[in-house]
Image (tube, rainbow, N blue to C red):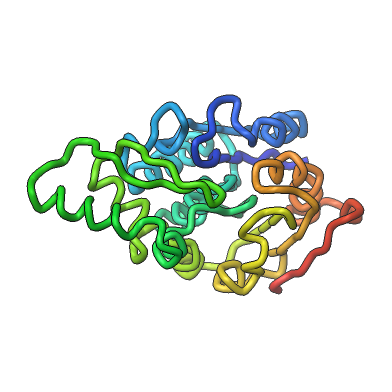
Length: 253
């Protein structure tokens, strides 16, 4: 089997070993080299660096795997980490494929639903007043708002409705067609958005697939593990196996 390098980005407010740990362990057991960097949206960091710096960290992790001898490097992630993987691939062109698991953090919808408008105004006002230290601003996870102390500049990068973390825009920015596996759980609040909201905006590739599974948001990485392993096998040159029961798949080839 070909050895891949895979960078997996964890989700919002997660902490080590992260919800992606089971998937990462299975990938390593399959002979793949996996990096799971801690990113600015972890529970221990709470947005201590801007979104662009997080993308640089993912790009650096991918580059390090190539230096270690990996000929192909995939970017993947869960929740906000999935969004960031898409954004990194679009901006840095560093991925040979993408694993998008229960993508989350949709600043355009948080604003439209009335969660973040006031905090965005507060962040703008603080910057205009020359106040750049952390202030209480609203974040939302799975529909539950929570006030966190963030630097205003960082807040705008993550939460502006026209900023760099908008999921559909990050799909549009993918410059070339690469294999994309997108897995969404039927119990995820974002499930109702369907494939047309963002997945269908990525450049089509014959190996790309949109898969629905029986899982909630947090449980998707673990539940998706056999699907990811199967997709890697089928996409990168080995014999195909059937999808596990209970899943439905659409391709965009």
